[in-house]
Length: 115
Image (tube, rainbow, N blue to C red; front, side, top):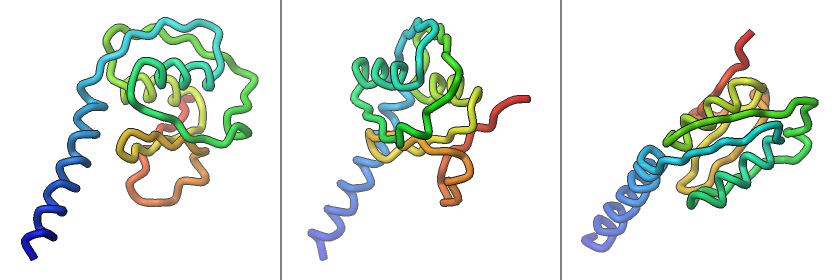
């Protein structure tokens, strides 16, 4: 019984630690005329996060410009994904990107395109 309680405490601590990391880790990005894949790779290179997505979901006739000084990963994703119909969900240090219409699961962070 004591072992189960200790394992549960460790598990909960790990979940909160990764959430706090995403809120505390600050990135400065200046990227012009780039694809989402390029932006995701840049975030991966400068943080401990890794992205998962279907490449066909990222096929846009659009390039992105982003200029953020000391923003959190979540702030950066909110800025970039607000321009397209994509959403993200964070699992520990993994970020899943998907089309809005595929995300009917509770807990997904949805970002709608502004008209």
